[in-house]
Image 1: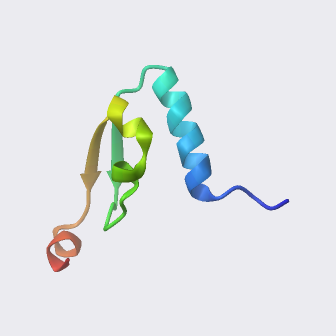
Image 2: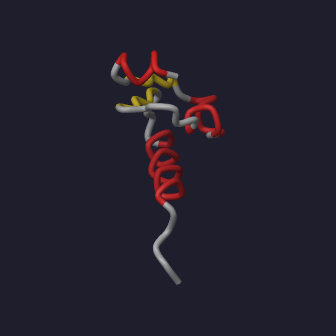
Image 3: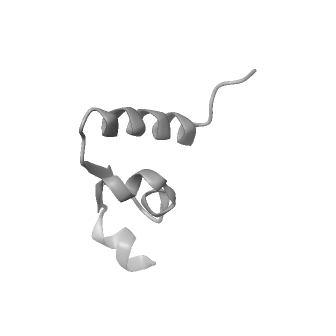
Length: 59
């Protein structure tokens, strides 16, 4: 069996953090990633996405 997909690891770690009481999620260099829109955990978190203005305006 291979290594778990990075998104699976992120979901597991984020779920653990939510259980410990974390209520904010900061994604640096978000680009066009839609993780915060796809994850069911986001209903329990305040999501903040930060990226360089050039990346955001380009799209």
